[in-house]
Length: 176
Ligand code: ATP
Ligand code: MG
Image (tube, rainbow, N blue to C red; front, top):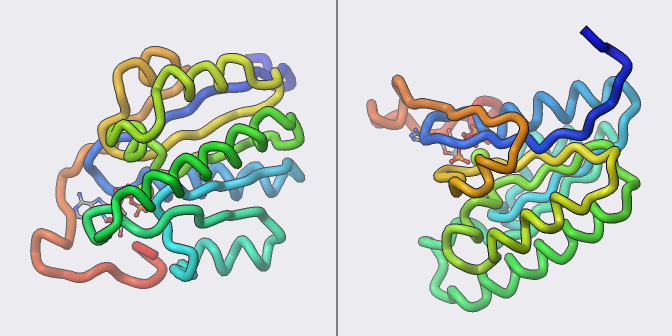
């Protein structure tokens, strides 16, 4: 096993089961512990969500940017969501291209891709031409096949059981 050799990876967490964002956060923490520079850009998270991970990020001094407007099916203004997604993608592109980060997490980016707001080819082009030191983690349900083909590491979370099915609400610290 070559331990020291750095190879920047494209990592995808997808599937209907819980744990995609949590897995990305685990990697963020691991990298942070090594003194690596990490940024997490959330495509769907509302600016005033203030989830546990955002509170933690402030205390750790980690850049975590909620750039979405919440989930789109709650929105009455789709075009505004689309504009925000495109803006979020512009920010993501510049962070990736800067080469300043060891890991950039694009949380829930599969949704704007699947809605047709971001072109998959554009996303893959940016990933392909990124500086050679930057790992990129992409999360969200229904990762498109082209992204799966391009990635180095893909894990599909499969739902076996989720408390939501028993009518149990999201829990602080577990879900948000
Ligand atoms: P998490 O952020 O907990 O890792 P996730 O990123 O895999 O979850 P998302 O699709 O982003 O899942 O949804 C986030 C929210 O939806 C969380 O509150 C999570 O508990 C809940 N959730 C995730 N999977 C399911 C599921 N299969 N059924 C019901 N609720 C779910
Ligand atoms: Mg998620």
